Image (cartoon, rainbow, N blue to C red; front, side, top):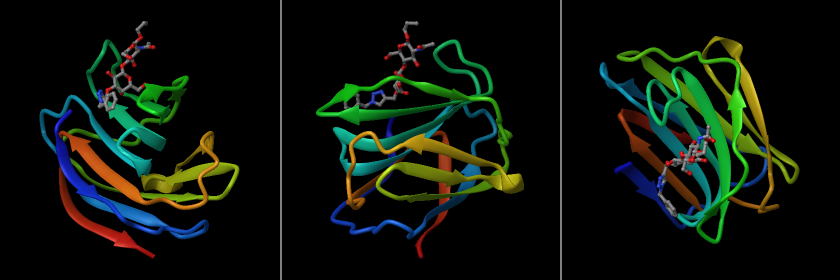
Amino acid sequence: MEHVLVATHLNVQPGECIKVKGKIFPEAKRFAVNVGKDSGNLMLHFNPRFDSHGDVNVIVCNSMEDGRWGTEEREADFPFQQGDKTEICISFDTTELTVKLAGDKEITFPNRLGLENIEYLSVDGDFAIKAIKFS
Ligand SMILES: CCCO[C@@H]1O[C@H](CO)[C@@H](O[C@@H]2O[C@H](CO)[C@H](O)[C@H](OCc3cn(Cc4ccccc4)nn3)[C@H]2O)[C@H](O)[C@H]1NC(C)=O
């Protein structure tokens, strides 16, 4: 997937929130929000798939360590629609990450890398960013 945005040299602390607001393309196949240390060390690859890799309307979450993917987790909820505006809020602590989604849905994912801060954010795929907010 092509990068829509890459932010580096961040210093997001546990309990702080990374808010990504934007619009999903009308014909979107997939998009991803990645947070971690750098492009090869991701605490979370958050990847909603509308129709990609044989997945239809599934959120795939994974981690990446030294360029190698971890074990995927697939979520039951899929609060996304092609063409819609959406906002996700990622926060973390030493044990897990929390992704707040529209409709008060929430997804958690283990902090497998045990990172104490987030230095890297990228947004990839069929998504037009409106705003990024660190709070
Ligand atoms: C059933 C046997 C094959 O399993 C499939 O294996 C595919 C290839 O690993 C899985 O698709 C990959 O899943 C990853 C998350 O686990 C990512 O979503 C992959 O796409 C995003 C992506 C990022 N990058 C950049 C990259 C790649 C390597 C190192 C550094 C950056 N390349 N592809 C995406 O290609 C796909 O989710 C997986 N499907 C299942 C059902 O397990």
